Image (tube, rainbow, N blue to C red; front, top):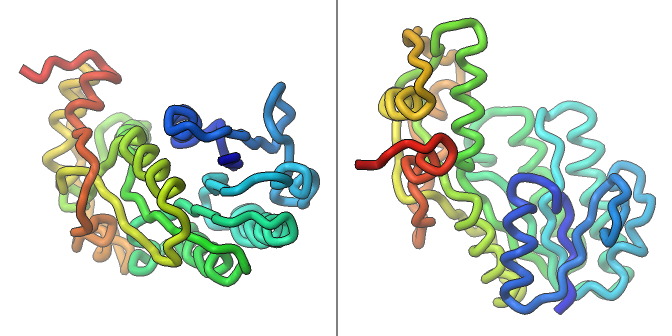
Length: 256
């Protein structure tokens, strides 16, 4: 089938496109920037969406603007509404939307926008499925790198995460495309739940740039939610790729 992939140039999109191709689908990657051989459309304005969705059987909707501000509302929430309107008019049979585990329980502006977008998808008039994934390995890596920008590694050691390999999420999405619309929200996480305090030494060893740790306690409802496992899921099956395997690939860390 012909599958349109929004956000195809992102971290997950670069895994989803080959996963769908390997499954035998004709993949039409989409970007807001002109790219040779890609569909060119802008979720913020709606320009190009009708042409992008024409003839597509399924849409895998990955495009997102993290942050939770006006731009997120314009692209994620209203842009998805524009996409669904165009998809409905074109007779698209299935929209698969990628969301985040915890959007319904972790008080964060970006998560509220993602939850609102889930509701747009469910009410958009096109058969749908939603996959909520836990944090990608790359995100946890980036979070830890950002936490060292003042020198020491600043972190809430009790913050819990369940990082998942992007390749595992891509494979799950390819399976959902083949299965057809479920009309349900599915959660999908990595194989291990961990506290950042346990992850940090492994990450520092992989990076070979040791920094002193400066423990903090994230305040308010957000801090309580992430310490209580709000970013984690008990759903099965899980992905198989571990964070140590990611570190080995990213930094050449020996797992012996």
